[in-house]
Structures are given as structure tokens and as C-alpha cells.
Image 1: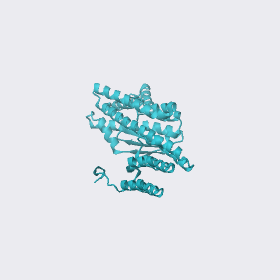
Image 2: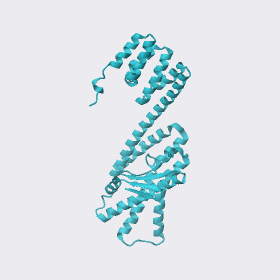
Image 3: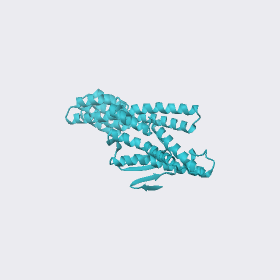
Image 4: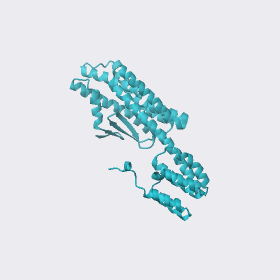
Amino acid sequence: MELRLGSIPLRIQGSFFLMALLLGLNEREPVKLALWVVIVLVSVIIHELGHALMGKAFGLEPRIELHGMGGLTYFNEGRAEVSTGKSVAISLAGPFAGFLFAFVVIATQLAGFHPAHPIARDAVRLLLWVNVGWGIFNLLPMLPLDGGNVLRSLVRAITKDHGEKIARVVSIAVAAGIALLSIRYSQWWVLYLGVLYAFQNVQGLRQAGQLRVDQTLAEAIQQGYAALDRREPKEAVAVLRPALATPASADLRQVGLKIYVAALLREGAWSDVMDVVEREHKVIGAEDLSRVSQTMRELGREQDAARIDELVKAPAPLSEFRT
């Protein structure tokens, strides 16, 4: 379902309504269940509008999507480019939009408006519960909740490179605590959220570690390439050797190994070239190995060239074949 809230695009997936129905299954009456779904829909839209309007105030272009886990506000321009203060404000705007909506509901009651119909009274009660309860939960320092985003923004501003890791570790600890409390009080939906968020943050922590490793190798590749361009192969070798010892991604390692082998060839470090080729020939690839073999042959290293040719022609182990 595609809608627009003024200039803000809104997309609602069918899984959102399924999630709302599952959360409201304790309501046996169809009318109350339908009321619950409408209240969840309105409340989540208000929450996401808080994020969207705050981002729009900072010059970003928001779009909202409601899905099976709630809602998410995207920005066409990178949110990472805004300052820490603005990022925190965008994160907090969601739950506080819900708090403001709840305050308006309470204010109307204090002004003397008390609905007489039982369904209307249920609607007021559910509106307060969803907007206040979910808003408080959303402020917990746990990714991907808004409180977790605030934590990550603040820690990044203080520690620079370690903000993601610290935020993920704190999020895992909070998620584990939520899971344990939910077991104690038999809150199975909250248990599901705790386990889900713990798993997501463990995965995020691994990815953050991989990104740091890849960034280190990428920087070494740039420096090594520049050193080769300056005809300083020894410097290229010194930069790339420690970076290639890390468990970087395969594609990045392949690029790094090509430059590393080229630097070793220019250095005349034949034994080192062969050590790398023997150990990393699967990553380097047949095409580049053939080039190394040709270079070795042109330099009079016939035995080394023949050994590289054997590696190129060697059949892959059965475990590498895919059907």
C-alpha cells in the first residue's frame, strides 16, 4: 500500500497488519481486535512522522515504511552526514511524538472530555498504552531501537572508531537482560524481541569487526599502490604484509595480493613470491597466476614459472564443485 503524508511517502507492507493482528490476539471480540489494529497503525505512523519531520527540518528527504517489525524512516541523503546533535534529535523525535500524542489525549480528558461508549474508553486506554509504553521501550539503549541509535551516535562522537562496537556490546547486554526478565514474567512476545535483537546485534558486531579489518586492508592497498607508482616496492611490501595477515574479505584480499606479489617481483624476492603463490593461489586466481608465471619466465625463473603453471592447471578439489 503506497500513500503520501503531505510530501512524505508512506509504504505499508501486508506483514505490518499481520504483526498487529498477532499482537492483538488476546482480544476475542472482532471489534476490539480491529480497534487495536487501527490504534497500532496510527501510533506507529505518528512515531515515524516524528523522525521524518525532524529529519525534514534538517534538510533531509524522509520516506516511511511500515513492516512486520514495526516501522522505519529512511532518508534519501545519508543520515551519517548530519551532526551528532541532529542525529540524536532525529532518534528522539519518534518516541517523543508518541508522548506528545498521549499528552494531548490526557489533556482532553482533563478538560472534561470523557467518552461514554465502552469502545471509545478502550480506544483511549490503548492509545495511552501503545504510545507511552512503546515510547519508553524504544528509549532503551539497544539497537535497533531509538535509544540504541542515540547511544551509538553519542559514543561515536566520543570514541570515533569504536562507537559501533561499544553500542553493539551494550545492546547485546540489554537484550539479554530483557530476555531473562521476560522469561521470569512469562512475556513471550518480549522474549522474542529480546532474542531477536540480541541475534541482530551479535551479527552487527561481527560485521563491524569485518568492516574495520577491510578498511585497514583497503588503506594498505591504496598506500601500496601509491608506493609502487613511486617505484618504491619495498615500502609497498612493508605496508601490505601485515594488512594481508588479517581475515579480510576475499575480494579485497585478491586485490591486495596482486599488488603485494607485484611488489615482491620488483624487489626480486623470488622465494617470497613463491610462498605467497603456493599459499594463496586460489585467492589470486588463474588469470593473474598466469601473468606471474610469464613474468617469472621472462626473468629466467623457469622452474618457478613451471611450478606456477602446475598450480594453474591443477583441478579443484571435489569439495569445491557445486551442483
